[in-house]
Image 1 (cartoon, rainbow, N blue to C red):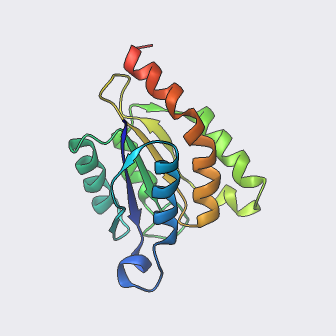
Image 2 (image 1 turned 90 degrees about the vertical axis):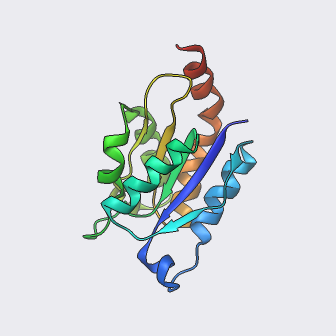
Length: 160
């Protein structure tokens, strides 16, 4: 079974101003896709916190890492910037599919700057997916990504 984790980057969730429903939904959708998912980890927004959480997730052996939040336009929305150094293979086609799915539901989908990519091309590498902090954004993104997980990991594990 593939191990996965959800990292929620949200100052408002950390402060208790907002509940973690988007993070919980992400974990549920990953479990429904057959992954072994740890409880979501909540941390403040910002480059350093997210980068450290991504490194921790990789060290723990998680092969699917979903970040929720920090993809918008605000000054502390730095999840894509924190993620980029961890990605060796950017999956632009998958990012386009997620954008198109989001745009079918809201014009605001184009404001999310989330990236998707692989940490490498080997059997130990991981898929990192940045999703917005809304339940709709989580549903749109993981609705595209989850059906493709078996194919992605079959290729990585075979070395295709």
